[in-house]
Length: 264
Image (cartoon, rainbow, N blue to C red; front, side, top):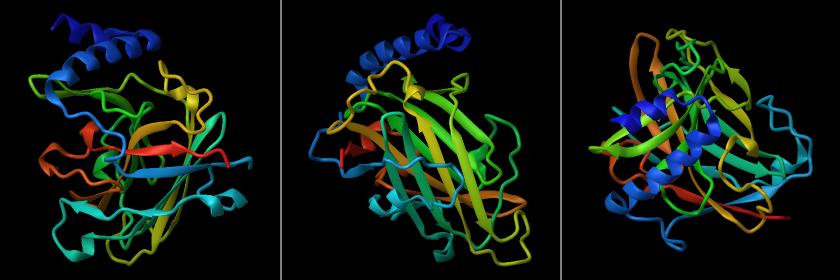
């Protein structure tokens, strides 16, 4: 318990990361199956030379070179209409990761307004990342809803007695841009969809090497939360990579896929 209290009280981010990595390695060896290179799907991240702006418009030329993937794995859904389409793209350069989510959505809904609040109960784009090609039981999490309210954290997955810990004191700088076609929080009409664009500085992944990335692989997962009624917090969930065990939700790091940084 002293370790848990210590983690919550830390103010120095570098100490947080080093502590988490050490404890994650110990716990992981007892509880999880590691990622094995060759078993997990790989998303190839093209490198960009463009100066990208986080405006949700995807109008820089290099986005045409980005691999397009769809979210084909659904759970927590009531009816076929809950399986709305999502497209995902990613780029990189020596300073940043660039993410682009493109959502079809017939009902744009988001109520959370507080930083580090429950954005995952809204229409929300999520990104989980572990900057190594393995599955330590920790990762960085970014969750943002349509009004650009952010929930960012470090996860200690099944840290103690199979309980996971979310540490919201991790507050990195990153940019988010949004566009949407429809009306927000109005159940009486039919909307078209929305987009979200992230720019995440590589410096946000403190404690990990982010230099000379060409050819390297990182573990990650991309997630959509899809809320369709203003007064009902039910939402369907879809993911880029399969999670297999929906009881464990979307955070099991041994179910992450891999990104591979491509130079050209």
